[in-house]
Image (cartoon, rainbow, N blue to C red; front, side, top):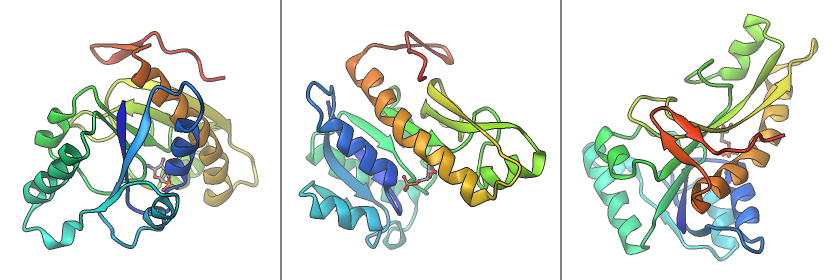
Length: 203
Ligand code: GRF
């Protein structure tokens, strides 16, 4: 399965997906790394690793539709079958999301449906929750919704800061995103309504 990873910045989940895809018998290959920010650190690293990269700078387009049509063209050029959003900080329109329905995953740094949106670690600490985590889900037009493929939980410790908690969650992100891509790309799971069936527990 020819997979594109969409990033906007650091790209540590991208690194984890690239490393996993290099393993023998992994059902997906990373055929493209795309960023809406030409200066994204992850893009520089992907290039240095010899991967195909594309920067589609959202700022030079008149609107979301033009931006997305341009991305779609690049995806077609590279014959992409599957997309992993990995820290991609642009909202996508229903048009684009529906084009990739069932073929696009996202990772979110919280245990959905809790803490949709931004600043998830700050909000979890402010609420005093004892368990936090991350979620890989299929993308649907509603932000941070969609059938859940994999989740991992981490404890929240008394002396946690958003940074220390975020780092603990990020280690789990790097573990479950490759696992979720493997499940989705191999066809081991199927989507029924809002549920992904056939997924194995991640720990
Ligand atoms: C991760 O926390 C991910 O869950 C969120 O954005 C962050 C991206 O980090 N969607 P990185 O670019 O993969 O390092």
